[in-house]
Amino acid sequence: MFQIQTYNNIATQGLERFPPDRFQVGTSCANPDAIMLRSHNLHGETLPGSVVAVARAGAGVNNIPVEQYSEQGVVVFNTPGANANAVKELIAAALLLASRDVFGGMNYVRSLGEVSDEKELSRLLESEKKRFAGSEVRGKTLGVVGLGAIGSLVANMGLDLGMRVVGYDPAISVEAAWRLSSQVVKMDTLSALLGEADFVTLHVPDIEQTRHLINSESLTSLKPGARILNFAREKIVDGEALVAALDSGRVGGYVTDFPTPALLGRQDVLLFPHIGASTREAEENCAVMAADQLIDFLEHGNVVNSVNLPRVHMSRNGGRRLTFCNDNVPGVLGHVLSLLADNNSNVIDLVNKSHDNFAYNIIDVDDAPSAELVAAINAVDHVTRVRVL
Image (cartoon, rainbow, N blue to C red):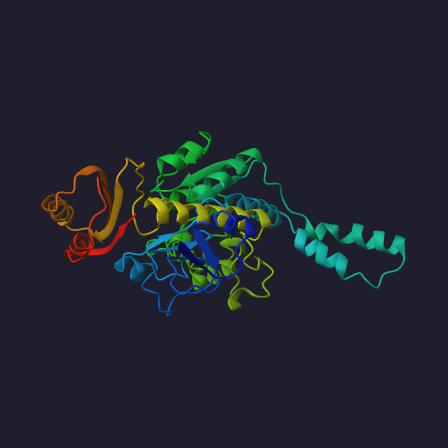
């Protein structure tokens, strides 16, 4: 029986995916095979040696030491796209709030709590409403940086709102391209997009290449007065450069799900309390996806939506299944296959794929490999984790 250690409040719909006759799920497991979590921070914690997989019910994995786990042969899963609609809907709200001073108008009405005369209230509202005038988004240009699961939905939404939509993503996948409307204008560079957009919305992961993507240099290309929406990650935007651009008027407004002290109290900034994926439906979708990925990996060795290993799937072809992770260097698979041949283990089928510095293999053999054979494979240089299923 597999043991699943959980952290945080995982949606019941996800936990119920684990068949109780094959999985034990709880907040305290003696020898967990896998961990399922949301925001719990695993940095600095000792990982039990029994753990072969960690699944985050969400897209970001900043709370997981991915590099360390990769070196230990531990697969790290996330759930891209499961919360995409929740974020898209919040972007719709942010876009409208950025174009019209709805927030200021509502705060003004709230300040009139002492007014008891209906005619006086009406007079005040009529005389002051011009302070909160804005513009429509229809006909404006929306620039979408990052056209993955969320970005493609946002781009298509912009078209539905009557906007012209331009997009930039040098690493767009075939799957994302299929989701994207042909009406979205593809831009060759970030600076070209920034120069045309009235509203810029960011949807890229927080990786080394994207940190401070919006900085003092890139902001020189921004269309003066354009508004920026950041519901991706805080570090995508250089905070100091942003404040300077707001002060100069280069940036007309900033809406973000990642408040910082430097932005508090500014009239040209709208701050959300990190609620991009905070919907019941998104939490349920993420939990279900994370659970299904763990089940498929633990029982069959298949890897889907891993951030540190390649996507690998192979249908069962009879016999027993052997899987192993290894450093992505030449000769490892050949060495393992020679050990199988020396032990008269007939290979029915196999798949080998790599991702950056790591590789993953699934091999189906006629008979269950002996403990001695498994130990020999585990001892091969650069092999980090062997499993028999």
